[in-house]
Length: 209
Image 1 (cartoon, rainbow, N blue to C red):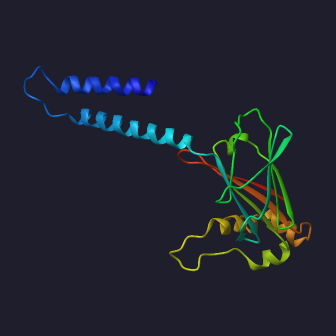
Image 2 (image 1 turned 30 degrees about the vertical axis):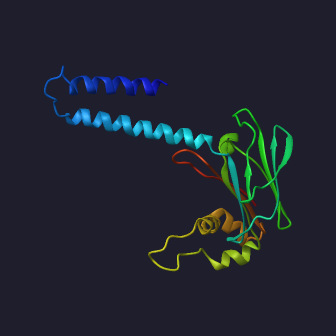
Image 3 (image 1 turned 120 degrees about the horizontal axis):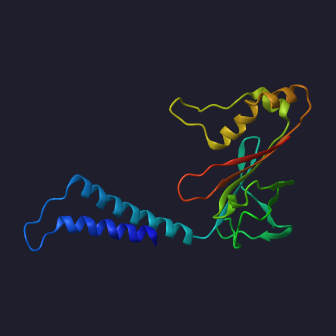
């Protein structure tokens, strides 16, 4: 409401200098043109933002094994303040967050798929407030996988895929490589959460080994 009032005030000031009492119409100055453009841009952003928050809050799940994506086939649970309930996928395989999320809650994600069980407490409950993309992944046989080295694009002009970036991050970590050489770890489990936000968002990766 404050933004709307501000826009109306600016528009009134611009038009008051643009129009005279039935006399010659003066061309807009550069400042006035910028002001009108700013009003239009802000109104468009407000409309897009309002539309964004009207959309269903959906979670898209992905399962990765040794850097290869596999369809998520299993069961997905969300625990809110120790109250766990199972979410059911829609026709597109997405899961809707039908409850209100706030910063005071303790939220734990749990997925059971491909004979694997992932349980991850979120550092910030609001990571799924408006929906999110969640990747559950494992890297098995660390010694074997580490000997394969990092993955690179097939062509110089290609960009490395997101799943390969995640996979590579483990074998660029000196601590993980050291533990692998000493055979102190056999596998890595990870959960990456990318919040659905209006604008730019930041992913959070949780790693266990």
